[in-house]
Image (spheres, rainbow, N blue to C red):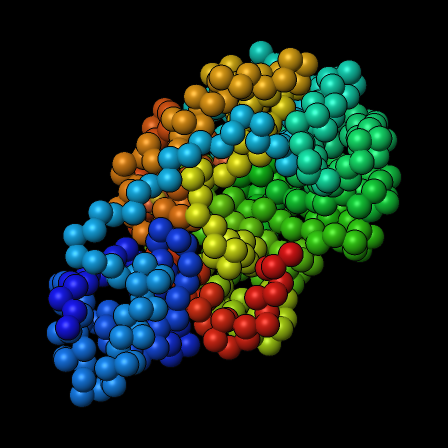
Length: 475
Ligand code: SF4
Ligand code: SF4
């Protein structure tokens, strides 16, 4: 006789490919239910039950041994537990202060040759006064930044250096000399430096393309889709659209630079929301390997900020594209929708984030004057500065930041099943929306939960239909 009473604990159920699954929130693991475990959870959904009663009520369908084994499995995964047991404590451990740096984003210029009307660096959304910063990073600061990066990388053998702007290629000379210096210094330190950059594509001259290809530099192009879409916001200083200027150059880049996948990064606005059309254009007509979409980061007062109906439309289109991605993956084929690929990787690796991203931890942004900030979007913001490349990171400032931004200090998120993957969302968006980096982005919770649910469905279906494809995410 067992009088132990059991109750369901914290999980999120979902169905995929005809099977039932649960996403176990505290451990961020995915568990496939069989008939017995599904029946046990079904019974417990009405409230706590003693073990013996569970066995009795399921006796017509399963042998007692099966039920007890199912109970054991569910207790092992912590999907169920003794009635009244305290909820699993939120991990409060803050990373140690010598947490190594894996990515440094170097803002080589604060200047841009486009005037994209939605850009977060300008207008009311700006959190950094661009005029207070040097327009271009100089050679000395770039070298000091590389030394800083290698010094902070700890035992990591590979470090990522991402060049960023303004328009990154406006400081092409500095990119060339910095890459050379980083390669030499990296070799001296026994480390490999992986380079990447983000550009608006306007300055992709033949010699730049050669250099990117010869040096295996990863490239992301910011562009928004077909001409009529792209040119609504991505304009030159004279108001002319940038599409015609960019596309022939991007095509040459894609032809020449084939060692690393080249992606487009699209900003979605209230006016530009035809995700399917944008995706097809950028992959089939321009030839990008993959496309990532992000809603514009802005306060809700702007005409281009997405309203609720737009978030819903974006979600529906993302869902369709995600299932398209699934069908490709089932057949072992590539599909370039990077939003779903990134989420599937996080689910597969069991990510349980104490922080939404690596900003201020394994990732920092360096401003043109050498100030070290949370990430590239905060480059130059004195309020979000962690140190300088010359003096290093101010560990007490960093520790305070990490403590205040830990998921344990976001009570609004504690009962949310999506927290292992969201953890409150982007600090920059929080700063723009709520005036503080420490606020969770509660304006998009429904969206995040629905999107995470879709990704779980895709993951479960892939695990059922072509589990070997998941090896792509094991590197
Ligand atoms: S911000 Fe919203 S969706 Fe994200 S973890 Fe917090 S409550 Fe959940
Ligand atoms: S704070 Fe936002 S923009 Fe910066 S790295 Fe994190 S998610 Fe990206």
